[in-house]
Length: 174
Image 1 (cartoon, rainbow, N blue to C red):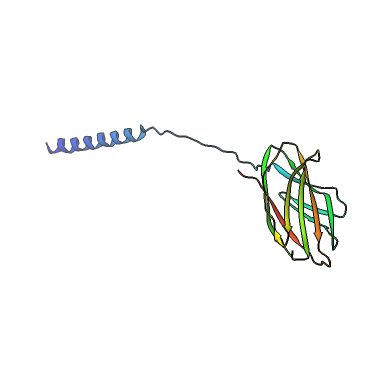
Image 2: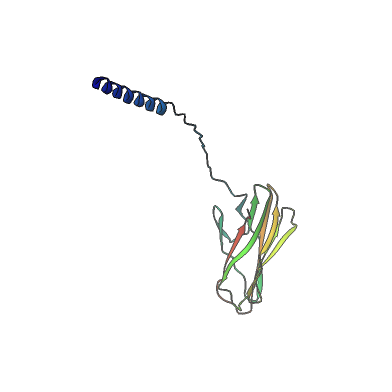
């Protein structure tokens, strides 16, 4: 009888092990997969060189640096085609004044006017006047394939000297 007990115990252990293996191997797993392809998105606005002589442009992606702008003391110099902004989609944007450094009582005013391809005035940004920074332009709307030119008007006071640095930012709200 002792022998049957050992055989029965072995048989029960074997059956329990087989049941455990069968349960584990019968488990079903459900899977879901997500694959994504991510590319660089271009901005809907781009800078392009204007046609004014004496100016130099350094366009690096979203940044345009213009050098060579000058204005006479006690006079105004107009750069009627300093730089262009071109749209690759219908876009609403803001033109913000980030900083004006070096301006003092010698600087009378800096005004930037935006014109569309038909020479319609789209906005006037007073960058500097009366010894103070001006206000931003907001909610400007440009359509796909349209190009605007930015005209700069620079006025110095009598006996003026020095250099003014202006930083503007085109902001495209999401």
